[in-house]
Image (cartoon, rainbow, N blue to C red):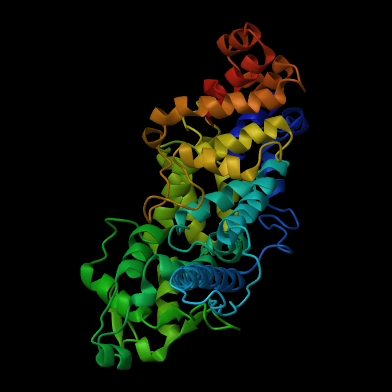
Length: 479
C-alpha cells in the first residue's frame, strides 16, 4: 500500500512530524511516504547551527565561573555592610569630631551577567525550537527528540550541559549507528554526572583503597534496563554490579580546570582492576576499552533490538503498537547492525505505521511546536514564556522526572489537556488577526478535521476563539 492524497499527507505530518506548516499538506500529497524518506536524506538532517552555542565544557566552565563570581559578590556585600556598621559605630562613639573611620577599598568586579545559566538554557531551547518549527517535514527532528528522551539527562542536575549534550551525543548519530550513539551518550559528562558515575570508585582501585569508597551502580543499571536491553530481559544483579565495576574511572575533569574542565576523562586510579563478566561474557581489564567493549556488545544484543523497536513503535504509532511493526523494526535493527536511518526507513515504509486511527496524544512539547508551525511565527512568543508554559503543562524542557524520561503514553498527559487552553488562547490572540480560522483549519488538519470540529470552529464567537478551539480540537491534539 502506498499512501497518497491529502489525508495521508496530513497524517504523515502529524504522526511523524510536528504538524503541517503553511501549504505542507498539498505540497506532499502526491507522495507523503517519499517526503518522509527524503527528509532523512537532507544534507544537514538532524543538525543545527552551533556558532553561538557553547560546547559542554565551555558551558560548564562559564557557569562555574558565574557561580564563583556570585559567591564573591555576596561576600563583598557582607564585608561592605560590616565595614559600614563599624564605621557608624566609630562615629557614634567618637571623642573628637576629627575622628573618622578608615574604609578599606573593596575589590571591583565586572557587573554580573543576567542569570547566565538561564540564558544558556534559553539560547539552546530557542535553537532547538526554531529547527522544529522551521522544518519542512520535521521527521528527523522528531527522531532527535525521541532519542534525547530515550537517553535523557536532567538540567536540574547538569544545568549547563543539557542543550550541549543533545547536540553532541544525540544529533551526530541520530541517523547513524546505535552503537556510536550509545558510546557517545554513556561517556558524555552530562550522563556521567546525571547517573552518578563520577562518584563511582572501584573498591579495589587505588583510590577506592585510599578513600574507603565504593561503587555507584546507577549508570550500569539504567544502561541495561532503559538504554539497551530493557527490563525483564534476563540480566542479573551480578551483571549490574560487574558492569558498574567496568565503568569505574569514567569521569570528568572538574570545571575548575581552566582549559579542559568539563571534559570526559578516564581515571585509572578510580578503575576497578581485573577481568569482569557481564551477561556471560568475560572482558579483560583494558582500561577505558573494557567499558567500550561491553557497550559494543550491548548495542548488538538481540534484546536491545527488541527494546528499541518497541520504544520507537510506541512513540510514533500507538501506545500498544502493532506486533508486526515491532517485528519489522526489530529485524531491521538486527540485520543492519543498528543502522538508525534504515530503522527509520522501515518505520515509515511499514503499512502498520499508516493506520488511519490516530490514538497518540501529543506531548506538550509536540503540541506547542505544532501550534507555532501553524502560526508561522516561532518567535512570536518569547522563549522564556514557552519554556514556562511547557513546564506548567508537565514537560519541563530537559527536566524529566526520572531516568526513563517523559512518558509516551496517553495516561500520563490526558488529565493535563485542559491546562493547554490558556496557551491556546495566547497563541490565538497572536494568530487570529492574520488568517481566517477556517483556512487555518484546512492548512493544519485538512481532511482529518471532522464535521463536528469544522462546525465548532465556524460557529465560534470570534476569530480568536475559533483559533483556540482549533488548537484544542481532538484532531490537532492527536497524531
